[in-house]
Length: 375
Image 1 (cartoon, rainbow, N blue to C red):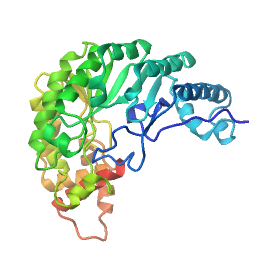
Image 2: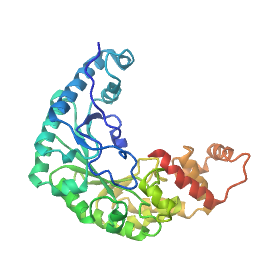
Image 3: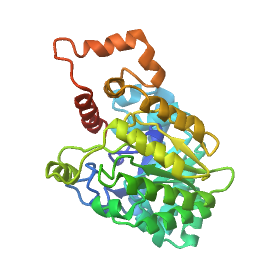
Image 4: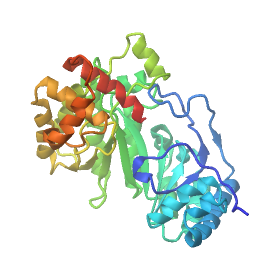
C-alpha cells in the first residue's frame, strides 16, 4: 500500500535541488518570455489551497515511510514515485522547501501563508522556505502582504531579473519594466525577505549588449541598498542561450538576434562589475550555462579579484579562449586553472581527432550553441 500521491512541478533553481517541492500554482501565469522553453504549450492554473495542503500532508506521510525504509521505499512502491524528491530532502537534513511553479506569489497572500504555515507545521526542521516570483506581481503587492508571508515563514524570493534594460525587456516580452524590477526587489527586501535576482548575460544580443549591461547594473545599484546588512542581495548568473523551438530561436533565425559568444559575454560581465559601483551584493555563478563558474564573491570587496579572473581569460589568445569554452561545455574544464592541466587538455584534443582543426570563431559559435543543452 502506497502513501497518497502529490503533484510536483517541472523545475526549481539549482540551489533548491534538495528542497521539498510544493506545487502551489501550475505552470507560468505569463508564459511569453521569448527565451524560456519550460512552460510553452501549457496553461497556468491556480490550485485549490485545500489540495496544496493535502499535498504537504501526503509528503509528510511519505517522509515517515522514507525515514524508516529509506529510498528503497520508492522502488518497493510504498510511496509514490514523486516521493524520491522527499528522500533527497530528508537526506540533506530536511532543511529547505521550495514553492512551485513559476509565480506562487500570484496566489492570494492569505492562502499562500496557509501553505507556508502547513509546511512549517508538518516539517519543523525546515529552516528556509523559498519561491519564484514575477516582478510585475510583486510590484503590485502591498508591503503588508509581503510582511504577512514573511511572518508565516517565507524566507527568500527568487526573481528573474534577466535584464535591467527596458529595450531588452520589451524585446524578450518579459511583461515588466525596469521600474517594476526595482519596485519588486525593493519591496521584497524591505519586507525582511531575502532576494535572489537571476541575471542573463548575453540576453541583449550583440546589438543591445551595452544597454543590457548598463540597465542591469542600474537595477542592482538601486535595489541593493534595501538589503539589511546580514542578508545582502544575491545575483545569480544564467548566461543566455537560444533554445530550439522558442520565440527567441525564431527571432535569431530571422536575423533579429545574434547570441554573443563566451568572449563577448566575459566582456559584458567585466563591464557590469565596473558599472555596479559600490553596490553590496553576492555574486553567484552556479550553473554550467556560465563559462566561469568560479566568478563567485562578495561585492564590492571581491570586485578586483573577479575582474582579474575575467581579464585573465580575456587576455588569452582567441584559440585558447575558444578551446576553454568548448571544454567547459563538454565538462572537461570547470576553472581557468584546469586549462593548464595536461590530462584535461589531452581529453579535449581527443574530441577533435579525425577532424580538421576548427577555427577559433567556429569553436566559440559552437560553444555558445551548446549552452542550450543545459536549459
